[in-house]
Image 1 (cartoon, rainbow, N blue to C red):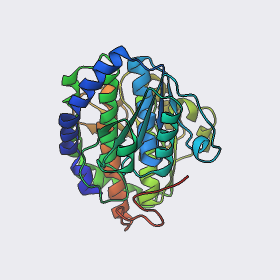
Image 2 (image 1 turned 45 degrees about the horizontal axis):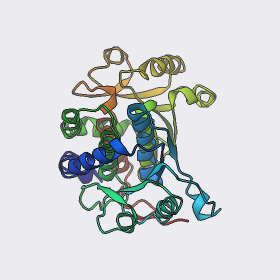
Image 3 (image 1 turned 45 degrees about the vertical axis):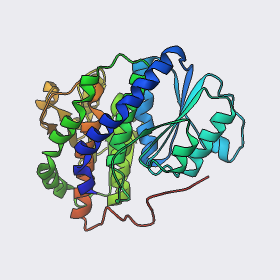
Image 4 (image 1 turned 90 degrees about the vertical axis):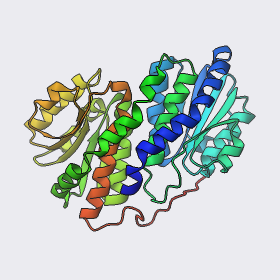
Length: 344
C-alpha cells in the first residue's frame, strides 16, 4: 500500500499526459452536445471519488449531477429515462457488476453518452462504455486502493474541462508536483501515527471539494486499521453527531482555505472547547489554521482550494498505512475483503 502511495506522482503525470487528448476531443463534442444531467455510478472507493466528481462538475460546469443508486437497476429493474443525460461509471477494476449494469441501463434508456473511468483497459467496463478515461496507475496490488483513487479524481478534472469548465491546463500540470511534495511528509506522518496506536473509533470531517476525502480517509482506516471511522461534512456534524465528542475523542479534519474554512473553523472552536484530540490536514495558504495549537499535518506549499483534494488525501493514505503497521496489521490484505468486489 505505502509503495503504491509513493507511485502517485508518476501515475498522475502518466494519466494526465495520456488522457489529455481524450479530454480535448470530448470538449469539442460537448461544445455542440451539452448534457442536461450527469449521472455517476460507483461503489466503494470509486464511489468516494464520485462524490468529488459531483462537487467539481456542478461547481465548474453548472450541470446538475446525481449519484446513481445501482440497486434501482439491479434489484428493482426500474426503467429510467436517460434522455439528454451523460452517464459516467467508475471502477478501478472495471469489473464491478452493478456499476456496469447501470452503464448498460443508461444506454438502453437513451443516454446521450456513457463514459467509464477505470484502471483496466481490457475490462468489461471499458468494453461497455461508449468512451473511456483510463487511469494509468499501473497494476494496483494492495486491496486498499490509493493510486487509482487519485487517478479517478484527476480524470474528473479532465472531464470537467471536456464539459467546458473554465479550467487551465497549466493548473492540472501542477497536481503531480503537489502529490510529490505531499509525499515528503511520510516520515513525520509515520511518527504521528504512533500516537494513535490504540485508537478504536474516530470521526473524519471534510466539506465541499474535500467531502469525498472524509469518506475515503475513514474508509482507509476502517479497512486497513479496523478503526470504526465515521465521516461527515462540518455542517452535518454539528446537526447532532457532535454530541458524541468528549475529551480526547479522535477528530481528523481537512482544512483548506476558501469558502469551507469559515464553517470548519467555527466547528474547530467547539471541538477545542470539548478537548477533542484533533489532527488537521492543511496547506501553507491557511494562515489562520497555522496559528492554532492543534496537531497539524501541513503540506509544504500553498494550494488553491479547487486543487487540494488530491494532495490532501495523500497524507491520509500515509497515515492509514502507517497506523496499520503500528498496529501490526497488513494493509495490503485486510481480513474478509478482496480487491474486486462484485455485487448486484
